[in-house]
Length: 174
Image 1 (cartoon, one colour):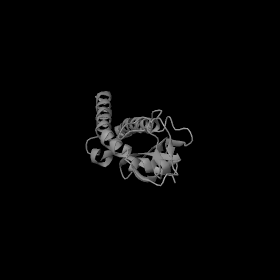
Image 2 (cartoon, helix red, strand yellow):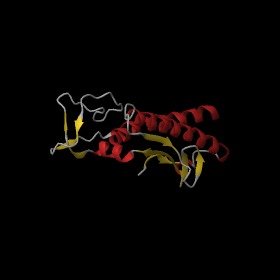
Image 3 (spheres, helix red, strand yellow):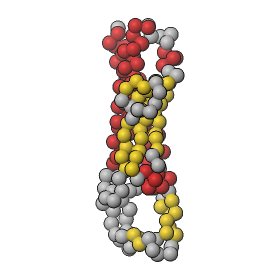
Image 4 (tube, helix red, strand yellow):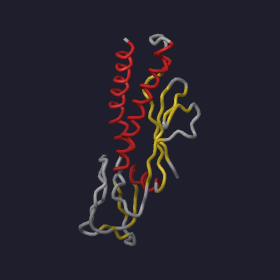
């Protein structure tokens, strides 16, 4: 089952109406949309790192908004004055979600077993050892919490990108 991560700009364009003359509003929107796309691309790239070494399971992360009303441009939309980008996951997303939130699994790893992924790290390594799912032993896969880290990290970063976009707009119109 696919999943979606929604990134919002953190402010409403309607709040800027009193500060931006009508003839400049479109240009400001374009600057903010470009900042939002940049955030979306960086988030997508970080998510792709989590599955880089997966061999038998494929998860694809894409920025898209084809099913979103209020379509503005590739992967971004304005709904009610709020800029939004959507990242969709497809493929083996059930497995990815299970690893992200943690799960109970039956089996046991070999003595040299090491998982391919780590908690809150956007990467996937080679791992080592083997996993025997037929052993009657319950183990807990610690949540990787990639989505939690993503939201924390990009909350601050996206704010900077939006502030830079507004500064760029102001410097180009002065």
